[in-house]
Amino acid sequence: MFKRLREDIATIRERDPAARSAWEVLTCYPGLHALVLHRAAHACWLAKRRWLARYISQLARFLTGIEIHPGATLGRRVFIDHGMGVVIGETAVVGDDCTIYQGVTLGGTSLTRGAKRHPTLGAGVIVGAGAKVLGSFTVGAQAKIGSNAVVVKPVPAGATAVGNPARIVMPANAAQPEAKPKSASESFCAYGITPNADDPVSLAIHGLIDHAAKETQRVDAIVDAMERLGARLEALNGADAALFDLRRLCAGLEGGAPASETAHETAKRAEAGNDESVADVDART
Image 1 (cartoon, rainbow, N blue to C red):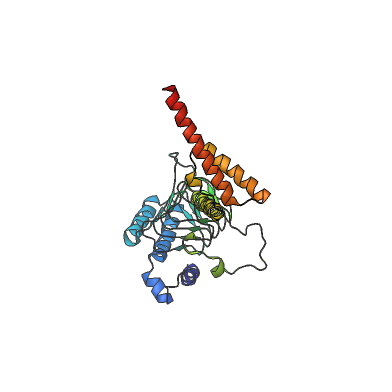
Image 2 (image 1 turned 60 degrees about the vertical axis):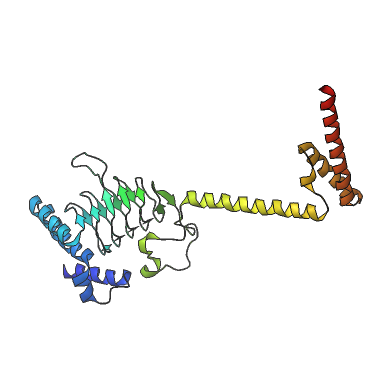
């Protein structure tokens, strides 16, 4: 019992820079208090003293704001940071070295009594604040669940799940073996934040916006270049005149004729075409 308690205190001091001493952790961290009371409640649950187990869990909920069903199984060195509003269901399994932040729900979606209804978290999983993990599936080891994500399907080991409904984002270096293993403090990511935690839909939209901005810059550059050559596209009337002007401009550039003369001739031709169109209308009327 005391060995587990020392492990828990050391874990909190490692993952929370605000923890300044073991005494502070022991007296001021509700996540630690909830874990200690859960172990007593879980022992009563396994001993078939179900009412006593539920009473202890309710007492822990009243004191800490953390609700852990006495039937839930929690591994070693689990860290519940802040903890207010955390709910862990009856058949949930939390692996070793997991980190759970405030407002997290490990809930069930089935009403079948006695069946596995709640999720299983592998070793080293980080669940960000406000995340909901709902269903009887497995979240792989070292996976990360972003804040406010709603996860309703399995998460592969080492992946990151973000959004509502959650989408899977694999780490950028998943296919590259590391030269040396990282220490626990280096691999830990508070609140499940990683460089790849951006929403894929948001990334796609930003990519389209960037592409549109680049195309706009290219069009502006082309227009500026044509104006420097002497072309005045706004002086032309109609799509046919614009097309004719572009053809004449290209021919003039290839033949060495001044672009300003080509544009001038095109403008005259467009004006003559407009005059002829007006004359035709008058003749018909």
